[in-house]
Image (cartoon, rainbow, N blue to C red):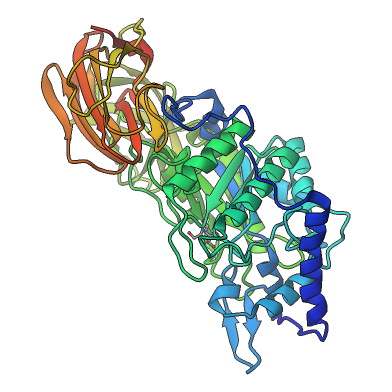
Length: 613
Ligand code: FHN
């Protein structure tokens, strides 16, 4: 049990912190107004912050392919190892929230941080643990809510370089970046917006000073370590200290980050954890029961019950549970970010390493990882009760967790016509009988399962023939400087896709104000499959969609960012008339049109399948 030793040098402690900040100011001057670099989009009418479709863009391709990442919660809180003994002898337990939930006085917490010496932090060993697990990206806490920076930031003295007992020649983020690069693993940083330590955070009058330091810290991280991803957190409304992070703050931050690195991926907590914020949603300690509408997503979870190290928490999840979580997540098109919490010396607990290795062993056995890496949701079949089914190209991976009794079939309910031209159990030579049965297929394996975690039946499938790729250029777009579509449009042009994130400050054209405008799109939608398609409109304020003259989405009550869906039967190669009417009243403005079908994974409706009238 670690308790923080009180020291007679508290004035020195406070002094060292103050010195750190004064030194930072002398060396760097006051936190400069971090002007957005020239390459950033300039906020204002005519700006559209949508840069691509995260579902299909080259920028997110590695993230969608890798599927499985390692989360690392490591910070000053790790020094206490989950337990704090109060002066009265009582013990309070928590992990990364221990400062707050155990009401540790600031000076005591700063003392504990001063003792922090993660001398055993071994970046190569951590990266090896991730590789052994089959985790292909790593996200480490660079700064959690306690404000303690895990790199030598110049913005204050509250960091691992200036306020610890750690070797001042070392930089663990640089070490991790180097090891991850050498191993071909992407590295991302978690960064908490909410900051319990910075004196300027809580007061709206001084928050801009905090925000400048935050921007400067993020610039340090991007410039010095080139992360592939920033994982924001601490965006929710909170007190003590007051947190009033707003969607507008998120707009500014995303614009700034895009200017620093256009390829950067961010999660939705950069804003207010909504479908229009960042590149992907972040369900936590849970798995959505179906593909998430309108946004990529990643479930983050702990291996035991805590994110940060907690010596007393030995309630570890089993490799079977963890691997099956990964299979469920991949089959619904999501990513899995599975957490480790190193101890005060920087060592990943052995029970964590052991479980991760078990997952990796399963993934590496007989190519079973094909059910995860680059695989995703399939609309071709319903999710069965006996396991999870993911799709990669013309293969379905049925990961069976409840193997049938000898001779009994596994039923797959088909949601669109397709044929099965091959079936095999990965890691076994046994035959698999495939027979059309009722609303789908019966799969009858001749032998037993190949393991306790899951056995994968790889099906080679041939969906119904698709129409050739279209040659469309997009829809006709008419922009009105009003919400009633009256008078001549201010702008008429061809819009390649309906994929717009105008946010608060942007609009479809420089001479169209950021509020009170309307957009009408007209033309034709040409599907490649004769299937039931799901159309999803992600809109703020209102949206209506007609297909072949029928109103299928009618979201006319002004709203914040939301997803409205419709299912429509479409014919391969046929040009279905489409009309969309969107209005922006005040505030944020977003309009995206996505589709999905049994044969088409969720994506922005592509240009090639859209035609002007
Ligand atoms: O408060 C944090 C928590 O400590 C942890 O970092 C998780 C991980 O996603 N995020 C917040 C809780 O939602």
